[in-house]
Image (cartoon, rainbow, N blue to C red; front, side, top):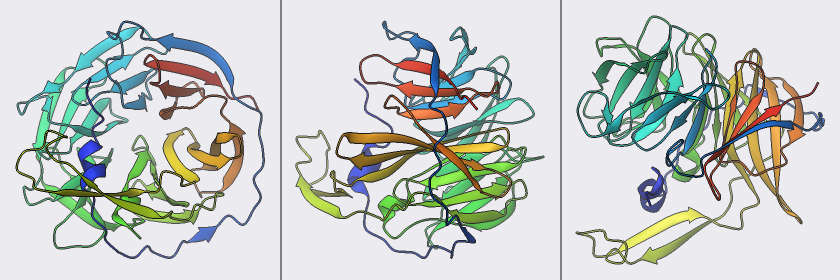
Length: 344
């Protein structure tokens, strides 16, 4: 069984500090509950040959959704009918070491970021055919997230060895860096830098951080607006433990220490999705009954809070479909995508 693409990252993260820009706005409002989502369809992969081993769900603005595995992208119609599959393990054109992030551009391309190589690969969103691969500078320490960009291959968030925080590069189709901007992060601790971002490039993107209430709204020109979300999510305590490298099958290590968030931490941002004029953030909030699944909705134009819904089921990832419905990814028993109506 394959492990998730972030296993080694979670094991080897080191403590680090950097500054977060002062939020531009604070919501200063109480949570307002909207009608709960209504389940309209369930697509289950009982044989393991439909979704494979999925770790991410991405909306296709042209209709349907994408399932992302470690080295493969699978496209589906909204009813779950397969359209195409692209990518495999390797270092050649159209191949990946580990897919870090995937987006669909307004001009009909699927752009995927390879964490280890690092490079951006594009496929045709209609057919899945390979289009191009663009190599990034080899001195990049780590690639993080990707967004579509007007008149360019993509905007890529990278960590550079000589800088704290992150930097956003706008990369041309020829691989040239045509623009560079410092990116807002939430790095009281390196673990806080784990982030999720959604957007199709026509207006920008919405970025959230795993253990932070800050939300970053990126516009199409590469500028960022930081707001405080409706949830107050303080960074939790961390715990450090010693691990046995031999037991984990890691060669060349005499000892290994892992720093992680306290497993009893009560709140965590799990995912973000965006579509049309709104974005939705999935927050897992601890309470006496276990974990409440809360969907917080925001307007993408100014970051204003619109209301919240309770999600009846746990979800690994979410996506806002082009028809206005919500899709959720589940991997507990069988890989499964559920489609939800969002009543007014």
